[in-house]
Image 1 (spheres, rainbow, N blue to C red):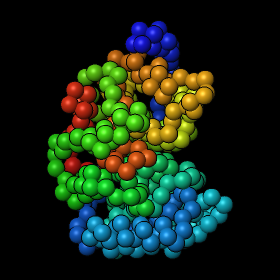
Image 2 (cartoon, rainbow, N blue to C red):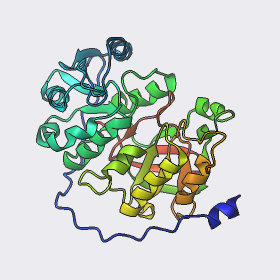
Image 3 (cartoon, rainbow, N blue to C red):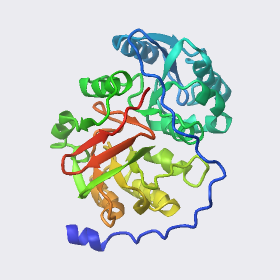
Length: 342
């Protein structure tokens, strides 16, 4: 199988002539750490939510020892969005401007976060550095804020996620009990699920260790932003990607789009999370998910892995955007080399 996959490997994308950016990224800054009893702002910057979800998110936040402040437009609905983009922007800016709020937690992902990017007040965000947590569609906000405000943000569980000990331990350690050289092992619960769901299996495609700043997120969003001024720049970085409910041919298309915009070979390493429900239907003529991703990863000369414990899953660890980390394929760990909060 390895030989056949190598033979089927996609040709390496030619490195494009990349124009020098007109927008130099500001120096990286870290938000203040969270303290017990702090107020967390709850917002919906993307997809719409409802009263039961809001109640669950409030319980989740309070269970971690925090107070909750609801965004003024949290319950708004406009199609599949949580209100008009102006309403979502108002809540987003409002939480950053509010001195009482110490962290901002997205209730969910969904769609629509990209609509905010041209309108974000990056000066406001940089002048009021706060923790921002979320994943999936929130990827767009992470990439834009990291790029234009230089603020470390956190690819981690959304507020309505079903909490697990693994997820909450790593989230709160990063936000409240920061330490250098913080080693994150993969979740045993995910490895157990791999017996029935192959996408949960930890795999090393290219072995080795890689060190670089963390960048990436949901594959669909990272691909959608490729070629724009908000695109992830993963040169010498550890690029992390996750996805859900996408057929292998669509995963291939998005990875091809990324590789053509900026070759994966420019990264220090590539770390794929758990691509849940991304296998083809049993009666469908298709490559497997592993065969699909290996077309892109196997030819690389940098460490590349799949099945790591992040994505649209219950047991996920938190990735601080912009922080330097080391991926070790032999130990199957990610080590945060520096603290992500001040």
